[in-house]
Image (cartoon, rainbow, N blue to C red; front, side, top):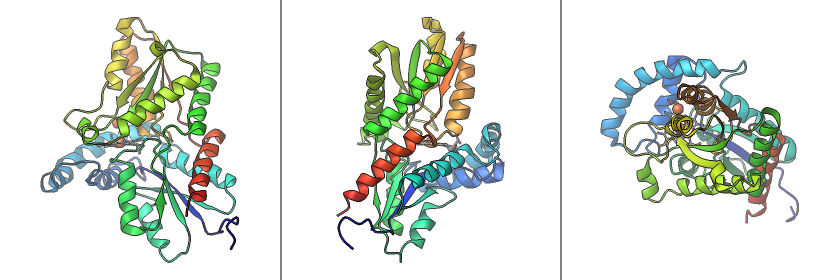
Length: 321
Ligand SMILES: C=CC1=C(C)c2cc3[nH]c(cc4nc(cc5[nH]c(cc1n2)c(C)c5CCC(=O)O)C(CCC(=O)O)=C4C)c(C)c3C=C
Ligand SMILES: [Fe+2]
Ligand SMILES: [Fe+2]
């Protein structure tokens, strides 16, 4: 095979977080049990955390959270899974000769199982975690599975200021404004992580701010037209701030009546965007005296998203030496 011919065996695994298989307490408990037992996600001592997780957290949380999943469930399944599967199909159409598949870090289709199955395959396997910003809690955990199951596979660390991705997000915001009108303030809401991790060197917070700045610059926004917040706090300790819910609840008192919220840390719509932002935070905003919180959807399987992801993967395969 010559240098210029792409081996037909390239494999691209688009990896997302994972989601329950059904909006029911047992299915949610199974998913959360795997997710929250990962020491990358919860850093408490195992001997304390694992019994607490099994005996207290899972029974209570799976009951509460399964109702939230039920509110956003689609005919074909969990939104995160549906959008990630469709995105993989859109990327596949742009990468002839590459086997493009979607996998999940937790639950199904399992990243670990797929990597194991590819062990005796001569393929170059590229794993692209669908997290634009690198975090030890998400990206590094995908790296852990690669190290265990197929160390020869390679991983894209992040794409937080990739020009095609930045432009795709900015364009999706412009399109939303064209269709629904524009609010007085644009919030970039990213999933939070414990502040202690950032103090220990996790680049996530810096990358979130860099993403928001790049998207705001593409939109030509002045500094007072947008802000960056962090959502989905879980458990105790200090998390990244300012918190999305507290910010949304405080803005009406400043005279802000209409806001737009976009979540550029999520590649696909999921519980944390469709339920937490579009339902819960919209209600917080209204209760505080605001008129409308307009949620701007994730890029999901849009053509611009597929193009950006295909470009990132193509460059990673080209740089493979
Ligand atoms: C986008 C990046 C994400 C980071 C960073 C992240 C960190 C993080 N998450 C938890 C705890 C939970 N997250 C949950 C759902 C969830 N989280 C992400 C993404 C990131 N998480 C996504 C895409 C989803 C949605 C999954 C879906 O099925 O739709 C949940 C489950 C829901 C709930 O019980 O509230 C938990 C729990 C921690 C502790 C953490 C960093 C330490
Ligand atoms: Fe999360
Ligand atoms: Fe949440």
